[in-house]
Image (cartoon, rainbow, N blue to C red):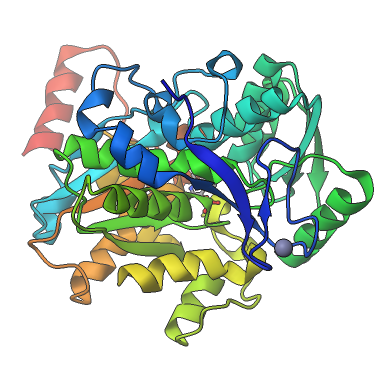
Length: 417
Ligand SMILES: *Cc1c(COP(=O)(O)O)cnc(C)c1O
Ligand SMILES: [Zn+2]
């Protein structure tokens, strides 16, 4: 049995192939982004959709679709395989009977970043890497720190100054070195990291600069297609920061189509905050590249507040255009409403994550999402990690009582009449 069908990297910039099992970040020749390729022809002959159902319920069920060579190097906390929950509230409000939530708030460190870091850290371990660096708006740092600690890799995490204190503490709790990172624009961060690759040869875990992390996000496609008996949904809605999540899911759906296991792909919807949203601006202009835009400090959606995507957002924009999807922004007040709606579903999401539901609402109002569509909203992170926003969405009740039956019956009469 072949454990991985990955074959090599190809550079987005110069199209040169590179050997997989080298500690590469970006292309050594032109600095372009590297993409992992697979022998899909062989996978089609040797694998079948039915063979996965009895395996471990984590994202490692799909190991043939990742570049890790040896099962012994897997660093896992049980990530992936999260519930796909049918909406009972928002779907009714919106007239969308087939609205589902893929609830990655249940992941080991509370965000969907765990998929990417389980794979990227396992792969780094396989390469013998002992030290690694990432930058984080909060959640990536926790994931990296947790998996790196388990793998014996020394992690350094540069945490955006905008991240809330709890997220910063959690990164330290999981055992990483941290420093608060001040910057004007995401462009500065990208430039600094590119220089660190070149001059220090330091292996990095930032999405896309690390060419392996987003491969794990393909597991969304496999898990969702499997849950619907190997049918792709009509619409997949993703909050977008770096775009690793949406790009990975899109790549996964593309692979399933090429393997002939599904017969369609979803329309991919990229969601960003109104305050930044460079991808959305590019989409509105019909452009395939996004320029710096907006102010990251002006939204509660911390995890998707980047003003300038890596590689000018080319991958994300191509997922949106090539799938026939769209890109949309949402305001903080729309996000807060979506957090309350999700609460009625039994899901506590952080603002960036609730942005996907806010965008579904907009998409329905605009006629871009139809009532017959099967729609998947990715819940990327838990509301527990951004408590101030959860408190903002639903302020604490001011009602009070003593432990006295008279007061209780008075209160209940007030609440339920
Ligand atoms: C990182 C993050 C995102 C954005 O994901 P990208 O892969 O960077 O586009 C969305 N939601 C949450 C909760 C996140 O932590
Ligand atoms: Zn190149």
